[in-house]
Image (cartoon, rainbow, N blue to C red; front, side):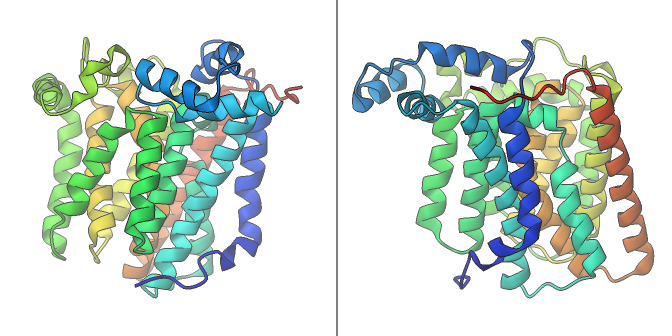
Length: 360
């Protein structure tokens, strides 16, 4: 089934929010500890004297993921601030996350309360700290491509989906690990049995509490399956020197509470989803990895949350369609409002870091 007129809802005013967040990402001045600061600083060393084909070959032999640096190459060549990459990527990431909701609503004829529709879109926007989204700029660009890939999958345009997933991997090769988890659920999804679905969700929660007991052996086994270890920079995704759970993460509570509330909304939504499909199965696998990550790794938690941004709206849409029970909807609204409060806490906790200026 191909969705007709896939861009007709872009005229909707709700897309002003992703544009505004993208504009802020463009203006954001990262402090030195953030990854994006390093990418902006290293952009001065981009070899724009090389022809584009030679530049791609040069970067590809240095590292598999060259797309982000190629975008920097073009920005510098055209005298465009490299901050534009972050701004455009963030805006498109959230816009495509909104677009995913439009697609599933149309494709599966999902209808629900306008208030809940508003809250769902709001949660997509505030489920992950903006400091995290803006500071992991290359990840954000890669996941923007993932969002396009997911939407093309929903629209059953598989070739285009494959192209965008390839672009994501060649933007940040570490995404191959998280996409492998998603596709493990997507291609081996279970049928529509609520009991099985709920059992898997609860098992994922339990796995998070005991992650430190098995994670080293699990990642060691995975390292034998993927060639991700051929690059030193990617080995950190599979090598665990020390396990730390969410209470021991070096981040402040303004970040930790957001992890918990976002996970709580996911648990509640996935536990009460009644209509399963490959996207939902893939999302459940990503959620399970998020739960496990909360039990052993700050880095994996952050990266998994980023990947969940384009999936949040799809999960929520199927939850809202399947549940008309007023008590469940009330609890869902309460969880969203708690998430809004923790998002505001996160904004306040970084009050000294919100520096914006034109990058000229």
